[in-house]
Length: 615
Image (cartoon, helix red, strand yellow):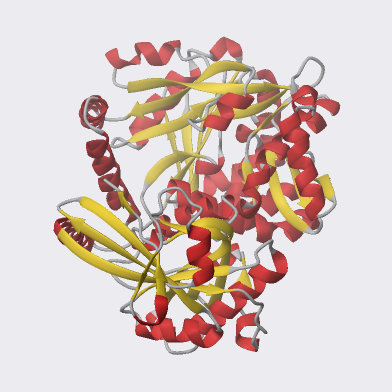
């Protein structure tokens, strides 16, 4: 590790072993804490209790960089940065863990220290830039708006930040008394006893982290194409290290019975708590456990004397719903060379132009641009493979659009089935299993697409069944506890003549096919439907050409009650339905849109037809 100190006229840059020695110095840390107290815009993310444990945990990834200004031996200004070794880029200490990124100094030096600090950095790092996301509220930035006339170039962009008021005068208690929230609580109580608690010990947080990690990765994986804990194995240890620091972490958990349904872990920032690691169980999404946790958290914080729940900048709609007040924070880019500044300006202008064009184009064009963006960011396959995948999908859709004829069979089960040992081995709504999904072909959904689908379905009340081999999701299948329609996976929309549990969307990895997962899944889902739900019937739809699946379905005890056909000619879709079961045929006769029953074929076989344009 290098040991260097670079000095300018009024600030010095300390890196390597010299920086580590300062971080280990009791005298330097004491001066650091005193400077924090005298800086009006300082946050917890500039404190020694935040930065020093982070440098310790991430020592192999980051090298400390301290920008220091002294006057007569006293510490007058400090900017705590780090060099990411792999990418060789300069970041604020804490990197993405730091919600607010800024320098600290006395108010009298608010215009002097940042200019001196970045001038010193420019002498050390003559290429590239430093981005601070976000500067702390109240940070003086007048110097940055004037800096582009000198050797340092800056770019300042302001973002809205929401604040939720706490304590007396807040809307929290009135919100908890609303009919909708009382109904959500009542539904959760029917599942199990509700408890909301603050986690005060490292052991308490550690015990909850398994569920927190999975909930976090599944949600961020499906919504933001990120897996915070899977991609960063040190993140869990980092939260536990911070938890061991006195009066640094505020952690809470909402449970129904023994199940963690929502959680929040953040750092204490004076009289405010920033919205931090926030998770909830998607399978209970219909009861809004995340919303309830925020309300319980707000009430608890108000009772403890906190003033605001800092909802932090971001475009999430729930932040606007909870916010009582708004202010601004900034993203500050500091460029150490003019070429980097010019490239940034060109890139931002191009993005701005593209957004303006997209706003004036059709929904299809906007969706195409979004899809291209997903392809660029996923990085799960080389660009050539991603291109081939999308060309293949386009060709397949084009063929189906011009001319296609498909037939599907509807099967019904009206009695519970004895579950086999293999069926009992399938897990129900196990989020951790979904993170082990790996696409098996170019036409398979990416992990992001799969997790997004998992979130949507679980939050709508569907039930997921999975089987896992270490490191690989072998099988998944879905159950809708009660429905009156089926066939969506085939592009159809079959209106059932009665309410039933619907089994659909099954997948088995190629390496596990022929091992009985399909039959086990049929048994597990039907057993669940009859024993744990309101269903008296179970329905499954399968392609008529899939003889293997049809055989398994019939062996389990399902009977064929009807067939559906989907015809497409140049984008115009027509579906037809034929019921061969007298019970289904009789029930169908009462549904608007079905034609009268007619008798055809030998033995007085009954059929009911209806047609509907789907374009």
